Length: 156
Image (cartoon, rainbow, N blue to C red):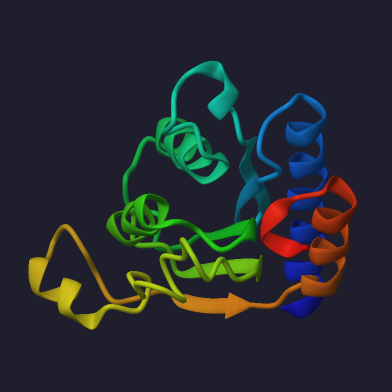
């Protein structure tokens, strides 16, 4: 699983670099299933929509492409920990796994507010299901090095 996680994380890194190159925040996201990548996205907040996080765009595209809001057979990858907005949507879409490289201690939907593992949300079935398996630190050193190269303030 680690080899597969690293492969998809490298794709997130490529997407984040493209986002940064285009003047946006350096975040990329991939949603994958047993047959590989289903959708991918990069941040597009610069397009005057603050909800255009890479994860939100990927989740919207996955629902449209798969014609379902039950993504319990899929894993979502991001080069950075999802924010609370993205984390809630991940919980509502019932992802099997959430994989990311670096923590976002100021904004994290896992490390600060722990939405991803909040067992209380299960009470609100069918909207929320069991927490996903959360995997952190995949290519963490590589992502931090790239963020530093970009001058990204969170990782100086």
